[in-house]
Image 1 (cartoon, one colour):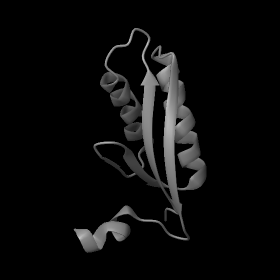
Image 2 (cartoon, rainbow, N blue to C red):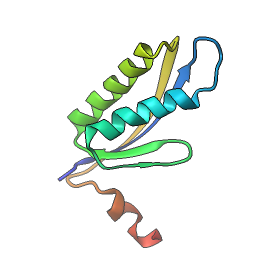
Image 3 (cartoon, rainbow, N blue to C red):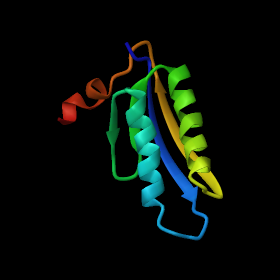
Image 4 (cartoon, rainbow, N blue to C red):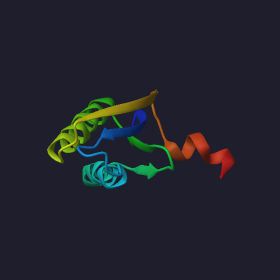
Length: 95
C-alpha cells in the first residue's frame, strides 16, 4: 500500500526557448514507465507510491530533462504522507 502522494510540476528551460510541452511529455513518459498510479492534471501530475520511489522518480525525471538537452529544470513538488495514502480516498467525496 502506498504511503505518499506526490504532485509534481516540471518546468524545463529549453535550449532555444522552444515550447516546453514536448519536454513535459517526456517527463510524463518517465512517470508512465515507473508503473506507479498517476493522474495528469492541467498544471501538475499526481503520483501514488512510497517516499523512496517517488524521490527516485524526481531524480529520473530531472535526468531525463537534462538528457533531452534542457538548460535547467525546476521541479515544484508537494507531498502528502500518511500511513496509507490514496488519490481515490482523498477525492472520493468529490467524485
